[in-house]
Image (cartoon, rainbow, N blue to C red; front, side, top):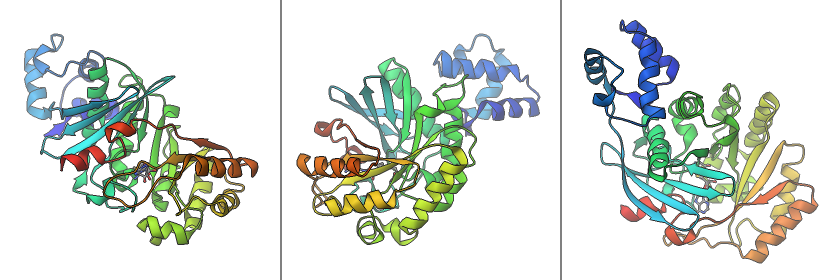
Length: 338
Ligand code: SAH
């Protein structure tokens, strides 16, 4: 049975009509789910009993479960148990301007980045659309608050689960469903070049972030196996193609790892690489994890790196640290549970 949260509005309307029901019933159902947040079909009093029976026979309304919550002042971390028992996590961050949620796109990840906790545990499977939608719904219900922005930066490589992620973006952006503004949605990829190009044609004004993490292939190959498949120049060309086509600026994520990619030479090389690219750099203080030998760069080194980029005219921000107390680095909670 197909889960009801896999459906965009258009797809559900079309399917109802094909099965001989009124298109309007889809607005009623979606209103119960996304506005009233009532997931129990028996309560859908404005829908005839026989139609409710049809819904039950045709669709699954099953929900994934919040199994554990870890809290800090400005962050909550959720461990979910999926219907087949697999675990994933999502992280809710309290920014000055609202709630931002980081969702997972796969159970595990096959990209194998050397610094990343999620990549230590191989991909078990892709998440289905409903499993991403329900992360948003259930967390919003849990905190009784509206989620303002979404980043697909949790466990998994979203472009290795492209179709389900795109379907998810359409659902959360729909005004009648979760109504999260496209400009408040960001997908982060380690650099799957063909998918970056495909994403350029996706009609919503959603954002792109690239996990660059190095200024050249030599360093990138040491920490990111995907660099063996696509060179850094191919990634940059794909970013140029994307920003020309969409007119949007791309975020270049750069984790600072002590002694690996944080020298002044690296900063200068990065500035050269990004010359003429419509992008800004988001420096990420590394969240150290017990299983991995890399160390975070010092505050001083981060500042020197930042200042070097600034002086070279590169737009640069440093990511605020959230929840280093509560194993908030990507994949840490799940890996602890497993
Ligand atoms: N696969 C996608 C999205 C998931 S990773 C991608 O690679 O972009 C989300 C971001 O968190 C990436 O930039 C990743 O490199 C970074 N990240 C992974 N482990 C981290 C850690 N321990 N500390 C800080 N950032 C980390």
